[in-house]
Amino acid sequence: MMGPGKLLKQIDELKREIDAFRPLNKHQLAQLKEYYRIGLTYSSNALEGNSLTEVETKIVIEEGITIGGKPLKDHYEAIGHSKAFDQLYELAKGDTITENDILTLHQFFYQTVDEKKAGKYRREQVIITGSEFIPPAADKVPSLMAAFTGQIAAQREKLHPVEFAAWLHLELVTIHPFVDGNGRTARLLMNLALLQGGYMITIIPPVVRNTYIETLQAAQVKKDKQPFYDFISAMVYESAKDYLRLVRSL
Image (cartoon, rainbow, N blue to C red; front, side):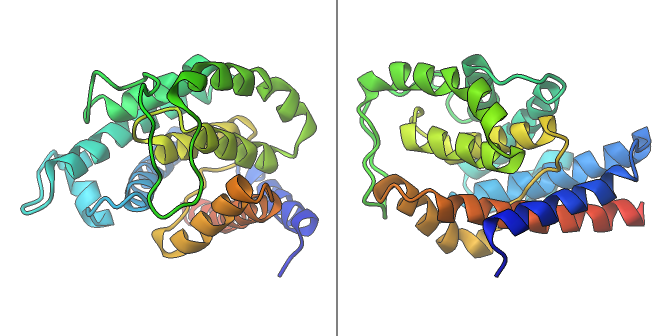
């Protein structure tokens, strides 16, 4: 297995190969955007127990057809994530990330599920099932979010772009500021940082969910962040290989 430093170098080598194909034309960019819209929406929702398959997710988003026997909430999550994905691309045109940007991503995702709680911090204690980690009290969320977002510019300067994206993800899910949709917002936020840094959309497939949860818990409970950073780097590496394959085929 590659060490952290070597893996980041491999990612940057893949990025250089991808950059050689840039700029892509409008048709190519549109095809890639739709490919990742479905892939990220399906995988991010599936990690949280959404029952829609990738094909069903595509049908719900592109054709607006409901899938018989599947919960209405699962449909709303697919539609909401697709809207948040568009907002992700809008925010990626900039080069900063603010507290308001994070609230906006959650709002776009969650407004179809529960409009009153979309883009709003939780007001109650939440328990993460299957985890020893207990999120902070609700009354601490606003100050924790302000402190976290206040560090963003400095951390971007200090860390490799992939580690910066992983740091954003970890900090957000550890604060757990929303009543629901924290993981999905964190993955959108991670991808916002990657896109702004010139990297590609990164998907965490449901098949690696156990490793994802284990490394996340190691960071939250044991304060050992490196396994999570290494896991995210491995996901970026695999996604970069997939992106290069797609770009070569277009």
